[in-house]
Length: 303
Ligand code: CO8
Image (cartoon, rainbow, N blue to C red):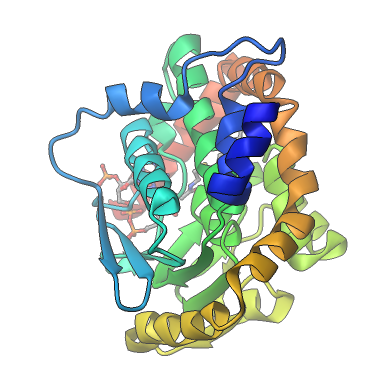
């Protein structure tokens, strides 16, 4: 714990998180999720491109994994490594996340990572999903999602993990936690993040019905903060970021921690149980059947 406190001065809020996440509940040190993730990152073409502007201190992280920026284990690994690097870089104060693909921000978790996979692999995958959310939701940087396309499920989680959301004003783009539509259940920390964003009642309706909101409807319930014409999503995010960065970092970071720490701590203290729950749920025959039907539905929409 002393280490954690020492490092909190050095790395701030998210530094505390990564420190906590490398200790087992029994106090034994285990392999850092970041290191174990790094070893697995063997993809050849980067799925993510990061540009840090040293004059503004703002990094733009572009997701570029066609066809739909689905969050596979490889993708999440790369995402976490990039986030960790930016977090450690003192010159980086703000992060904008966007997509290079037309029409899609992110299609959420890669369904193929949850279908027909061994329990061990599912566990590894889920740990990476947790890590992505812990790093993003607990980031010391000011974070803005520049949502230039549809953003269902895990894509929505990534968006609501940011501090502010700007979406393309296009009614054909949708966003939401639609898990129940796939016959699966959004875990408690997805739910908590949504409640923290839109309030309890809107979250309840949204989660039970697995609603995907068009961009205008998402604005109405506060799931996104602002709609702008599609070609202005990134420039608006840059302008908005300068307002966020006008606030002294330490005051904003401590306030952010005050707002989010309880939600983050809940997952940190239940992380292993959450992995066990996910693995036993997702590998059930009935859930695998639901996922297969959903995949078939996605394919048949094209035919
Ligand atoms: N994972 C894997 N493959 C996908 C995914 C996905 N999430 N989404 C789309 N694809 C595939 C399609 O099957 C298709 O493959 P192929 O070319 O081989 O036929 C290809 O990507 C392109 O898809 P579309 O033609 O549908 O592309 P469009 O541009 O027309 O539409 C959309 C883009 C809107 C993103 C659309 O693809 C879509 O709606 N996708 C499904 C999104 C979705 O429902 N995601 C949910 C994932 S589950 C999740 O994130 C949280 C799970 C929490 C688990 C908790 C358990 C306890």
